[in-house]
Structure formats: C-alpha cells, structure tokens
Image (cartoon, rainbow, N blue to C red; front, side, top):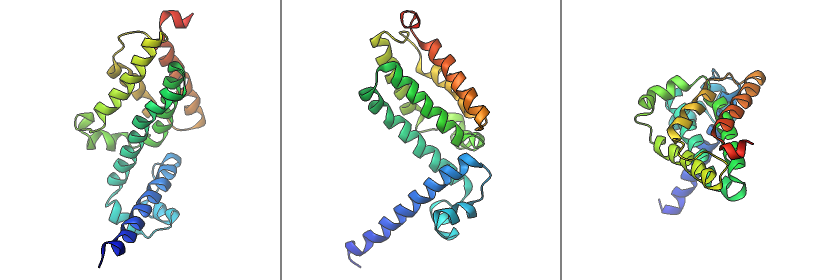
Length: 190
C-alpha cells in the first residue's frame, strides 16, 4: 500500500474523532449523563468507531477537557490583539464560564485523572495565559499590578461548580462581575 492510500484512512479517522468530540461537547453540556451510544449515533459513527478513539467515558471526557483548554489558551493572544485589555480579560473569563458548563458534572473525573492538577500538562500554560492577560491589563493601568495568576485561577474555579442552567448562567455572570471588579485597579474602578 502506498502512502497516498493511507492518508484517506487517517483523514477519515481524524474527521470521525473531531465529529465525535463536537457532538460530545454539545451533548455533555446539555446532559452530562448522555450515553456513549447516543453520542456515536448523533455523530453518525458506529459505537465501535467511538470506542476505537475513546475506549471509555473517561478518555472521551479527558479529550474534551484537553481540546477546550487548548482553545482557551490559544484564544488569549487573539483577544489581546483585537480588544482593550479589560475587555479581553472579561471575554476570556466568559469563555471559561462557557467551558465550565461543559465541565460541570465531570470535574471529579478530570480532577482524578490529573491528580488534582498536579499532573495536568495544561496547568502551567493555562496559568501563563492568565498571567499574560493580567500583565497587559496592569501595564494598561486597568488592572492591579502584581496579581497572582494562580489566585485568579482559584477564583475562576468556582465557575466549574455552577449548574449549567439559565439560573446558573446568570449566577456565573454575577460572579464574573465580582472577579473582574476585584482585579481592577483603583483608578479603573472610578
């Protein structure tokens, strides 16, 4: 078999994997107890294809977790390039709240799989993304100087514990207001 005949299979496999993840992201955010069979059916793949990519529920949840964190980390430079620092920070926090709705109900699985964050390959890049937002905001004068990005991460972690209902979304928005207000410099708060 030549290399060109192998590429379609790999391309199809990547396409199937991405389709499964896209469907799972939506399905899990609507119902964290959705079955893998239902996800496979909605993705238009057989259950065997799903299990080939994700041998169990935990592996699917962790793949969603990793994909979402990569998107969040990669979003920071884009937001900083297109928005004033405070707006970039707020928009990024809103994306974290959106992610929290996906993560709700799976926090324990993710926490266990990453040893409570100790073995999480995304921890340092995520903290660095927060640091970048804080540094740009402080340099612009809209955020307090010297904020600890890990302290901010701890504040944001409450978003992953809010039930993803309409009432929960309203609560998340109020909590984001409190967090952002607490990070503002005294000059920006006036």
